[in-house]
Length: 430
Image 1 (tube, rainbow, N blue to C red):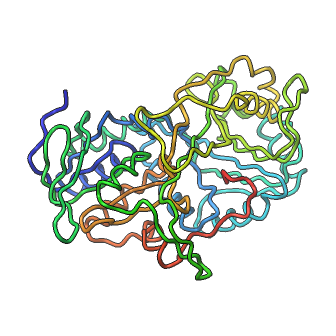
Image 2 (image 1 turned 45 degrees about the horizontal axis):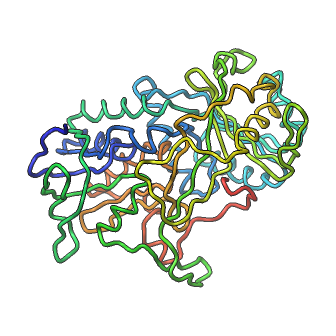
Image 3 (image 1 turned 180 degrees about the vertical axis):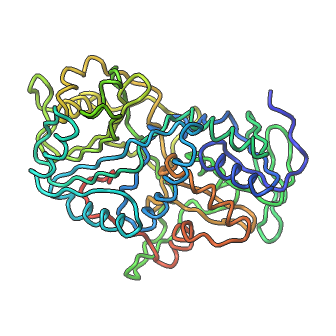
């Protein structure tokens, strides 16, 4: 049974995932009185089943700058946040070279530690200096981020909840929001929940893939017009599109997934145009493919090839642990394609509660903005788990400060055409 709710609270945060908990933590550190409610529990949604990759491989300047700030927060308390700063390596074929070169140049300008290797020989030499059994051919660009890495999903969110509560925030679970009372200006005066009505001065919405339902409760548009940077208008586009992120695990001792000097492996992301075959030389695909993988608690976890689900899906219960029939063959073949130690891994594949559905905005980038006079919405477009600094920036905005990191993600960009640049990559997940 949920704890009794107060009749009123200065700040109400809806959602106990990364954005809600981070916002509550930073607001409470400011001395604000904050209540977090969640319909199920801490990390019960997307944050709790995220693969946990933390990286700054973004083509868009605004994403890169925000992610640099996020890595700083992860690094601020690795123990409490269960963060492993092992680094992140992105590898690709010639089609990826221009993008990764530009990403690296930007990282150097903002002081983010990374190294770039271009040319098949240089890439192979660098990877073999880390892994003696590296064997993926045809990769001509490598961006090795020395910062970043991964964190364990539920443990990190429980740690974040602990930091929020220690700072003075209250977290009540098992409470579902059912509606809002708004005044003539559109400001929310009260929030209706399954445990009663709460009067509040400020609302923060941070509900991950459940954003469409809260968005509708607030009377916000399901379809919008989008102005392109060239001035043209694309009318009546759906605000939300759902994708399913395919992920899985192999049973593999993470102590064996280390670099040759015995250090924990960086997260590896490989995009390739090479024909992919399994260990029995059976053809898996002759189309471009991509995967990512990292050590986990007792396994190796990763995924790729997201599935487009459409503009409306039933997310109750939250769909998890489902992949296309050929995903496991593809992912395991790709592991073996890259590192000899994973040869024969296919029988050890197991489907776990990972991946899940994500609600992507009309341009696939987050919306962090006031959507009603006193309602700040964090709609992360499924970039969320790694973006732990967003809550810090929301707390600053609510205190009356300007956030240069969140400003590029204002909702107004769809009207003004101030959109984020689009990568040249032929790989949709990049």
